[in-house]
Length: 123
Image (cartoon, rainbow, N blue to C red; front, side, top):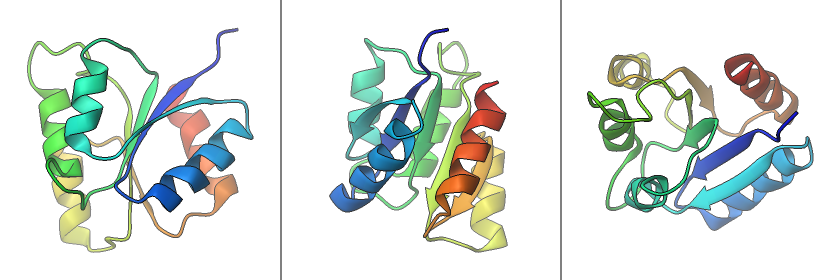
């Protein structure tokens, strides 16, 4: 069975490292991007099974990234996208859902719950 590839998108180097440690330690292949624009650029020539994105980032935030990935005729239109953010408001959660997010996890995350959420959306 091929390894599940996950693109993590977060402007925090320490958060990307924590995600890499958690995900790779559970057998997932992890690719990192420092913001939504870097993620879009990388996705032009590559594919993943899941995207985990922060909301508040420079250049292109998580809402913008989700919107761009969900645009009509894009090959990532059906890709699961989990939002991982410090934002906890119902309003922001509703905005993410409306943009096309698959799920929402508030930082700091529980590693076991994150892995369970990842397995749920990719299988």
